[in-house]
Image (cartoon, rainbow over all chains, first blue to last red):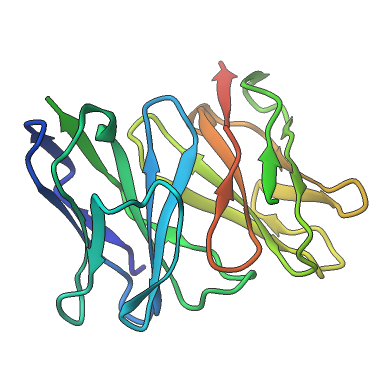
Length: 115
Length: 112
Protein backbone atom coordinates (compact mmCIF):
# COMPACT_ATOMS: atom_id res chain seq x y z
CA UNK A 1 0.00 0.00 0.00
CA UNK A 2 1.41 3.42 -0.91
CA UNK A 3 2.49 5.53 2.02
CA UNK A 4 3.81 8.94 2.93
CA UNK A 5 7.51 8.82 3.76
CA UNK A 6 9.40 11.34 5.85
CA UNK A 7 13.11 11.85 6.34
CA UNK A 8 14.94 12.00 8.62
CA UNK A 9 13.12 10.15 11.38
CA UNK A 10 15.03 12.17 13.97
CA UNK A 11 16.81 15.49 13.53
CA UNK A 12 18.95 17.15 16.18
CA UNK A 13 19.86 20.77 15.52
CA UNK A 14 21.48 23.61 17.40
CA UNK A 15 19.25 26.55 18.25
CA UNK A 16 19.46 29.23 15.59
CA UNK A 17 20.24 26.80 12.78
CA UNK A 18 18.05 26.15 9.79
CA UNK A 19 16.45 22.75 9.32
CA UNK A 20 14.69 21.15 6.37
CA UNK A 21 12.25 18.33 6.89
CA UNK A 22 11.48 16.21 3.88
CA UNK A 23 8.39 14.34 2.81
CA UNK A 24 7.39 12.25 -0.16
CA UNK A 25 3.59 12.24 -0.38
CA UNK A 26 1.59 9.46 -1.97
CA UNK A 27 2.08 9.81 -5.71
CA UNK A 28 -1.49 10.47 -6.87
CA UNK A 29 -2.30 12.82 -4.01
CA UNK A 30 -2.74 16.50 -4.74
CA UNK A 31 -2.97 18.10 -1.31
CA UNK A 32 -0.11 18.19 1.15
CA UNK A 33 0.03 19.19 4.77
CA UNK A 34 2.38 19.73 7.66
CA UNK A 35 1.39 19.24 11.28
CA UNK A 36 3.26 19.59 14.53
CA UNK A 37 2.89 17.67 17.77
CA UNK A 38 4.74 18.95 20.79
CA UNK A 39 5.50 16.10 23.18
CA UNK A 40 2.40 15.07 25.09
CA UNK A 41 0.14 17.52 23.30
CA UNK A 42 -2.32 17.33 20.46
CA UNK A 43 -1.54 17.49 16.78
CA UNK A 44 -1.60 21.05 15.44
CA UNK A 45 -2.13 22.10 11.84
CA UNK A 46 0.63 24.18 10.29
CA UNK A 47 -0.02 24.52 6.58
CA UNK A 48 -1.75 23.03 3.56
CA UNK A 49 -0.38 23.15 0.03
CA UNK A 50 -2.05 22.67 -3.31
CA UNK A 51 -1.10 23.47 -6.87
CA UNK A 52 2.31 24.75 -5.83
CA UNK A 53 1.06 27.27 -3.36
CA UNK A 54 -0.06 27.53 0.23
CA UNK A 55 -3.83 27.16 0.46
CA UNK A 56 -4.18 27.61 4.20
CA UNK A 57 -1.91 28.20 7.18
CA UNK A 58 -2.31 28.49 10.92
CA UNK A 59 -1.04 31.23 13.22
CA UNK A 60 1.84 28.93 14.14
CA UNK A 61 3.12 29.08 10.57
CA UNK A 62 4.88 32.43 10.76
CA UNK A 63 7.78 33.86 8.75
CA UNK A 64 10.12 31.35 10.34
CA UNK A 65 8.48 28.59 8.32
CA UNK A 66 8.30 27.93 4.62
CA UNK A 67 7.21 25.05 2.43
CA UNK A 68 8.28 24.02 -1.01
CA UNK A 69 7.67 21.34 -3.58
CA UNK A 70 11.05 21.46 -5.32
CA UNK A 71 10.27 18.65 -7.72
CA UNK A 72 7.46 16.27 -8.60
CA UNK A 73 7.82 14.09 -5.55
CA UNK A 74 9.24 15.95 -2.54
CA UNK A 75 7.48 18.34 -0.19
CA UNK A 76 9.66 20.15 2.31
CA UNK A 77 9.21 22.19 5.45
CA UNK A 78 11.99 24.65 6.23
CA UNK A 79 12.38 26.18 9.65
CA UNK A 80 14.74 29.14 9.77
CA UNK A 81 16.62 30.13 12.91
CA UNK A 82 15.20 27.34 15.04
CA UNK A 83 14.11 27.95 18.63
CA UNK A 84 13.92 25.59 21.58
CA UNK A 85 10.13 25.60 21.35
CA UNK A 86 10.31 24.21 17.81
CA UNK A 87 11.19 20.84 19.32
CA UNK A 88 8.31 18.58 18.33
CA UNK A 89 7.24 15.74 16.09
CA UNK A 90 6.48 17.05 12.62
CA UNK A 91 4.06 15.10 10.50
CA UNK A 92 3.59 15.36 6.78
CA UNK A 93 0.25 14.24 5.34
CA UNK A 94 -1.33 14.04 1.93
CA UNK A 95 -4.79 13.50 0.54
CA UNK A 96 -6.28 12.95 -2.87
CA UNK A 97 -8.46 16.01 -2.55
CA UNK A 98 -8.77 18.72 0.06
CA UNK A 99 -12.39 18.06 0.84
CA UNK A 100 -14.25 16.85 3.86
CA UNK A 101 -14.59 13.17 3.09
CA UNK A 102 -10.97 12.41 2.30
CA UNK A 103 -8.72 10.98 4.95
CA UNK A 104 -5.28 12.45 5.22
CA UNK A 105 -2.56 9.85 5.19
CA UNK A 106 0.24 10.64 7.57
CA UNK A 107 3.92 9.85 7.42
CA UNK A 108 5.71 8.40 10.42
CA UNK A 109 6.93 11.83 11.44
CA UNK A 110 10.25 13.54 12.01
CA UNK A 111 11.20 14.11 15.62
CA UNK A 112 12.97 17.47 15.76
CA UNK A 113 15.10 18.19 18.80
CA UNK A 114 16.53 21.68 19.21
CA UNK A 115 19.49 21.98 21.56
CA UNK B 1 -15.03 28.06 15.32
CA UNK B 2 -14.07 24.45 14.87
CA UNK B 3 -13.52 22.39 17.98
CA UNK B 4 -12.90 18.77 18.87
CA UNK B 5 -13.17 17.54 22.45
CA UNK B 6 -11.97 14.28 23.91
CA UNK B 7 -12.80 14.22 27.59
CA UNK B 8 -11.08 10.95 28.52
CA UNK B 9 -7.34 11.48 28.94
CA UNK B 10 -6.84 7.81 29.81
CA UNK B 11 -8.86 4.61 29.54
CA UNK B 12 -8.27 1.03 30.61
CA UNK B 13 -9.93 -2.03 29.13
CA UNK B 14 -9.60 -5.73 29.73
CA UNK B 15 -8.33 -7.75 26.81
CA UNK B 16 -11.18 -9.10 24.64
CA UNK B 17 -13.62 -6.54 26.03
CA UNK B 18 -15.15 -3.65 24.06
CA UNK B 19 -14.30 -0.03 24.81
CA UNK B 20 -15.81 3.30 23.74
CA UNK B 21 -13.67 6.38 23.29
CA UNK B 22 -15.63 9.62 23.39
CA UNK B 23 -15.41 12.49 20.94
CA UNK B 24 -17.59 15.56 20.55
CA UNK B 25 -17.18 18.27 17.98
CA UNK B 26 -18.44 21.68 17.06
CA UNK B 27 -18.59 23.18 13.62
CA UNK B 28 -20.86 25.44 11.63
CA UNK B 29 -19.91 23.78 8.36
CA UNK B 30 -22.70 21.56 7.01
CA UNK B 31 -20.22 19.21 5.33
CA UNK B 32 -17.42 17.66 7.31
CA UNK B 33 -15.61 14.43 7.91
CA UNK B 34 -14.87 12.79 11.21
CA UNK B 35 -11.84 10.56 11.62
CA UNK B 36 -10.08 8.50 14.20
CA UNK B 37 -6.34 7.99 14.22
CA UNK B 38 -4.23 5.68 16.36
CA UNK B 39 -0.80 6.75 17.55
CA UNK B 40 1.29 3.94 19.05
CA UNK B 41 4.26 4.70 21.28
CA UNK B 42 6.45 4.63 18.17
CA UNK B 43 4.79 7.89 17.13
CA UNK B 44 3.25 7.30 13.72
CA UNK B 45 -0.34 8.29 12.98
CA UNK B 46 -2.49 5.47 11.66
CA UNK B 47 -5.84 6.17 10.02
CA UNK B 48 -8.58 3.95 11.48
CA UNK B 49 -12.02 5.02 10.38
CA UNK B 50 -13.98 7.81 8.71
CA UNK B 51 -17.56 9.10 8.99
CA UNK B 52 -19.04 11.70 6.67
CA UNK B 53 -21.51 14.24 7.99
CA UNK B 54 -24.11 13.15 5.47
CA UNK B 55 -23.65 9.43 5.99
CA UNK B 56 -26.80 7.79 7.29
CA UNK B 57 -25.14 4.68 8.64
CA UNK B 58 -22.40 4.39 11.21
CA UNK B 59 -19.00 3.53 9.76
CA UNK B 60 -17.38 0.20 10.54
CA UNK B 61 -13.89 -1.08 9.80
CA UNK B 62 -13.16 -4.50 11.21
CA UNK B 63 -13.13 -4.21 15.00
CA UNK B 64 -13.62 -0.44 14.82
CA UNK B 65 -16.99 1.23 14.58
CA UNK B 66 -17.96 4.86 14.85
CA UNK B 67 -21.07 5.73 16.84
CA UNK B 68 -22.15 8.88 15.03
CA UNK B 69 -24.85 10.97 16.65
CA UNK B 70 -25.16 14.08 14.54
CA UNK B 71 -27.72 15.91 16.67
CA UNK B 72 -25.49 15.49 19.72
CA UNK B 73 -22.36 16.23 17.67
CA UNK B 74 -20.62 13.15 18.90
CA UNK B 75 -18.48 10.60 17.06
CA UNK B 76 -17.42 7.96 19.54
CA UNK B 77 -15.05 5.18 18.56
CA UNK B 78 -15.96 1.67 19.63
CA UNK B 79 -13.24 -0.97 19.63
CA UNK B 80 -14.58 -4.48 20.01
CA UNK B 81 -12.61 -7.46 21.30
CA UNK B 82 -9.66 -5.35 22.48
CA UNK B 83 -6.18 -6.67 21.86
CA UNK B 84 -2.92 -5.84 23.61
CA UNK B 85 -1.76 -4.17 20.41
CA UNK B 86 -4.60 -1.67 20.71
CA UNK B 87 -2.75 0.09 23.53
CA UNK B 88 -1.99 3.53 22.09
CA UNK B 89 -3.13 7.14 21.92
CA UNK B 90 -6.31 7.66 19.95
CA UNK B 91 -7.10 10.98 18.32
CA UNK B 92 -10.43 12.13 17.02
CA UNK B 93 -10.20 14.61 14.16
CA UNK B 94 -12.55 16.68 12.08
CA UNK B 95 -12.05 17.90 8.56
CA UNK B 96 -14.55 20.49 7.36
CA UNK B 97 -12.38 21.16 4.34
CA UNK B 98 -8.76 21.92 4.01
CA UNK B 99 -7.26 21.07 7.36
CA UNK B 100 -7.71 18.70 10.23
CA UNK B 101 -8.62 19.70 13.75
CA UNK B 102 -7.49 17.20 16.33
CA UNK B 103 -8.66 16.46 19.83
CA UNK B 104 -6.25 16.12 22.71
CA UNK B 105 -6.34 12.35 22.52
CA UNK B 106 -7.22 9.43 24.75
CA UNK B 107 -4.56 7.04 25.99
CA UNK B 108 -5.92 3.50 25.86
CA UNK B 109 -4.29 0.71 27.85
CA UNK B 110 -5.39 -2.87 27.26
CA UNK B 111 -4.89 -5.06 30.31
CA UNK B 112 -4.14 -8.75 29.79
